[in-house]
Length: 289
Ligand code: NAI
Image 1 (spheres, protein in one colour):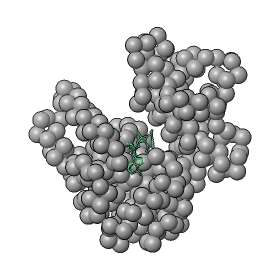
Image 2 (image 1 turned 180 degrees about the vertical axis):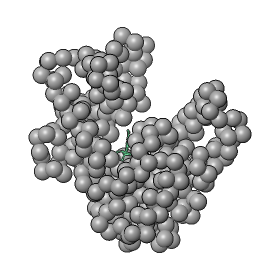
Image 3 (image 1 turned 90 degrees about the horizontal axis):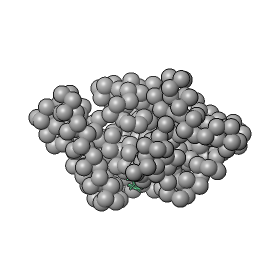
Image 4 (image 1 turned 30 degrees about the vertical axis):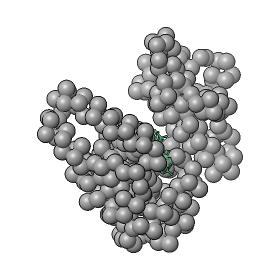
C-alpha cells in the first residue's frame, strides 16, 4: 500500500515510521526542506537506538528506511492510497492542503487528518468527495503509543471507515472509534489535566516542578502535566485547548492559559525548541524535578 504523510514534524515523522515498519511504501512531504532533513536524521537515530537495544537488526533498519521517500512537492503523493496529514492545527490551512491533494488523487484515495481537536466534518466539507475523509489520531510518540482514535465524520463512507480500521490493526495499533466531537476522547479527557495544573501554578499554590513531581512520583503518571505539555509542544497543546474551549461554546472548564499562550508566542515550545516550561539546554537538570 502507498501511504502519503503531509507534514513531518513530531507526529508525521512517527507515523511515517509506523507505516514503513508495517511494510507500506511511504512518501513524506513537508513545505520545509529542514523538516524533511530533520525527519530523516531523527529516523536514523531512532533506528540505531533500536539496534543497540537489540529490537531490530541492520537489515530491518535498511528495510524501514528503504520504504520511505522524502518529497518536496505534494503532487508526489498522487499515488497514495491513504494520506495522513499532520501539519499545523489550523482548519483553513488543512482545508487548503486537502483541496490541493484531492486535485492530484483518484476518488478512491483515502484522506485522513491527525488533527487533535478540529472538526473532521468541516475538513471533509471542503472536498468534492467528502466521504473519503476521516480522522486518524495517533498519540505521541506514534511508534510507541498503541492507541489510535479513528474518527469518521458524518460524511465518511462505511467503506472508508472499515478500510481504516483494518489498516490501523494491520499496523499493530489499537484503533478506537470516536465521535467527531471536539478533542475526541483522549484530548477532551486530558484538558483538565493540563488546565488545572496551569491554574494551580498561576494561583501560586505550587510551582510546576512540584506539580509534575507529585503527579509523576506519587500519582503514577509517566509524565507530569508540564513535562507532557513540553513534550507535545506548547504551540500544539495551546491551540488544541483553544479549539476545544471555543467548540464547547466557551465552557470555562476548558479555558486556555495565558502562561502557556505566552510561552507559545515566545517560541518556547518545549523539547522541540529546547525550552518550554523547562530548559532542555545546559540548565535542564536544574529545572527538571
Ligand atoms: P509539528 O509542528 O511538530 O510539525 C508540523 C509540520 O508540518 C512541520 O514540519 C511543518 O513544516 C509542516 N507544515 C506546516 N504547514 C504545512 C503545509 N501546508 N504543508 C506541508 N507541511 C506543512 O506539529 P505536530 O506536533 O507534529 O502536530 C501536527 C498535527 O498533529 C496537528 O494537527 C496536531 O494537533 C496533531 N497532533 C499532535 C500531537 C503532539 O503530541 N504533538 C499528538 C497528536 C496529534
